[in-house]
Image 1 (spheres, rainbow, N blue to C red):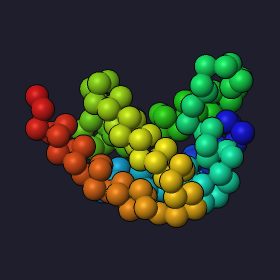
Image 2: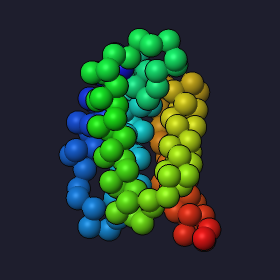
Image 3: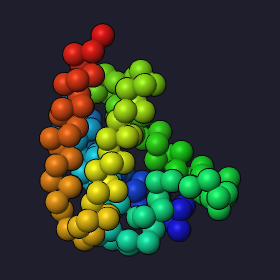
Image 4: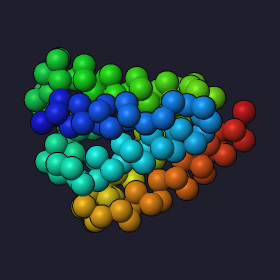
Length: 131
């Protein structure tokens, strides 16, 4: 399920428009990925698509799929001017928090999906402000 969830993420974000406006493309990346993770497609794989909780159940091959998705995200961040590893970590924390709220509190809905654009815009403003 770990690999399947990440394959779903890759499938959805690979269909997103190219990054002609990098910041807008980053928001669409988050919304597109968030819709998959929110449980609208397959809740069990959505719930485990973003982490191996340390039990070692994600094989090397499965984890490689997750890394592929992570790399796509890093490319979108870099296009928007975000390359500092700490800023990338903060981005994953913000998106993960929204995702977990969505899955836990409104599976199949869009309560936190709707907030993802605002959260990314706030994040980008903070990253641009911080030297």
